[in-house]
Length: 558
Ligand code: ATP
Ligand code: MG
Image 1 (cartoon, rainbow, N blue to C red):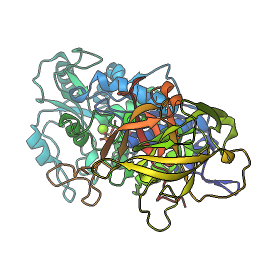
Image 2: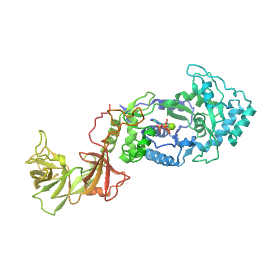
Image 3: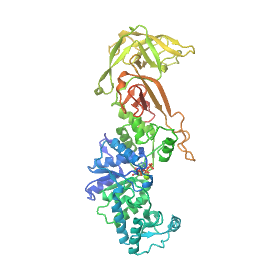
Image 4: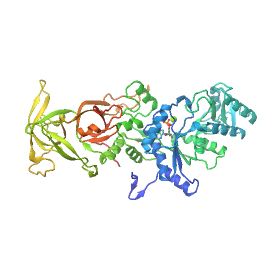
C-alpha cells in the first residue's frame, strides 16, 4: 500500500523513523530489530494492531526484522489459549508466518544470572521489608524515600539469600531482590525497585521449575538485549521507566544495548477496549464471545470483515506521535470502504423483501443477464444473473402514496430494475391488514440494460433478486455497542449499552452466486453496504452475512 503521507512527492517521516535513520547513519546499529511483546493475558485489540503494524512496518522499511515475543514473566494471568489467538491475529494482520516465536520465559535462566551479576557488583540486595513497610520507605513524589535497613547486606549474604529464595526456602512475598539505585531519586521507579519476587505459581511454559519471577522493568530490557533488539518501541506510560531500562542494560554491560522509544497509544472514541469490560460482556452473554463483530478485538474486526489493508490504512491516517489523541471509528469505516471499493464484487441482495410480479413476462421463463462485477474495476469480470417473472425487491422501494421526490416504485410509475429492464407499477395487493404483499408490474422488453435503449428515461433504479433461484440468508446489521450519547463507561464500571447494536434480518434473499460464499468472503450489496460471511454461524444452506459498514460516510479525510 502507498504511504498516504506521500504528498507532492515528499515523504514525511514519523519521529521514530527519524531516530532510526539517524542511528543507522551514525552506525549505532547495523540492523533494525524491533519486537511486539504482548502479555498473553487476553485477546489483541485495535490498539495492539497499531503496535504490531508499527514494529513490523519499521523492520520492513529498513530491511531488518521484528520478533513476536510473549512477555510471559507474570504467570498468574497468562493462558495458552491467548498465546494461540495472539499468534493467529498477528499473522493475519501482518500477512507473515512467523518461523520462530519468542518467549520471555525462555530467558529465565539468563535473567537469574543477570540478577546474580548485579548482586556481585553490589548493585542489588535482598530485602525483607513487608509490602506496607516498603511503601512507607518509598517516600512520595515530593519527599525522598529512606534506605531499607537491609540495604547494606554484604554481597556474600545477598548471594546466599537469593540462592535460597530460588531454592524455595522462603514463603511467597517474604523476601524480594531490589536494585540498589537511589532512594532520593525524583523518579520513583529508580528508588531501589524490586527486580525479583518469590511466588509459587505454575507457569504455562516453565511449569513449576521456578518459584522466583523477575519484575517487568528488569526483565524487559534483558529480553530486548538477548534478542539483539535495536529499537524497543513502547507506549508513553513507560517513559518514566526508561531510566531504569537504561540502568539495567548499563549495569549488566550489554554491548550495543537497545534504545527505548515511546509513542502515544491509539484511542478510539466511544469504543470499548478494556479487557475487563469485554470480559464482563462475554461472561454476561451480552456479546457472542471475544470475536463478536461489535467489538474491536482483532479477531472481532476480522469476523466483521475488516481487512489487514484497511487497518494498515487506518494506522497511517492516525499517525505515530507522542501527543495523546483519539481517533474516530468513522475513520476506520472510511478505510474499509476505501479498501473494498475496487476489490469486491457488487451483488444484489434484498434485506426486507416484497414480491414483484411482472405480469407480461412469460411464466416459467428464466433468462440470464450479463452483469459487470464492479463497474469501477473491469478486472473483476462479469457474471450472469437470473431474471424471471417473479422477483423480490426491498419493501421500502415501493410506496402506495409516495412523498415528493420519491422516484422509486408507486402506482403508475416506471423505474429501472438494476442491470435489467424498466418496469411500470400497474397494481398492488395487500393482506387483510392493508400491508402490501405483492407489487404487479409490466416490463418493456425494449429497455434491456446494455441494449442502448434511449427512448425515454426513468428517475429511479432499484435492485432485486429473482425469486425462484434466490438463496435465503440472514443478515446482521450493527450499530455501536456503546450508547454514544451517554459515553462508554459508568462510574460503577459498567458499560452504557446501545439496545439497538444488533439487528438480525432473517428473511433476506441474495443472488444464487452467493451460495458458494465461504467464511470471511466479503461483497458489496448494492445500495446496502459491504457484507462479510460470518465465520462462526454461516453454513452452505443457511448463509449469514455481517454488515461491515454501510455505503454512506460521515467521515472526510483531511
Ligand atoms: P491492554 O491493557 O489494553 O490490553 P496492554 O498494554 O496491557 O494493553 P500488552 O500485551 O502489555 O497489553 O501490550 C503489548 C504491546 O502493545 C505493548 O508494547 C503495548 O505498549 C502495546 N499497546 C497496548 N495498547 C496499545 C494501544 N492502545 N496503542 C498502541 N499500542 C498499544
Ligand atoms: Mg499489559
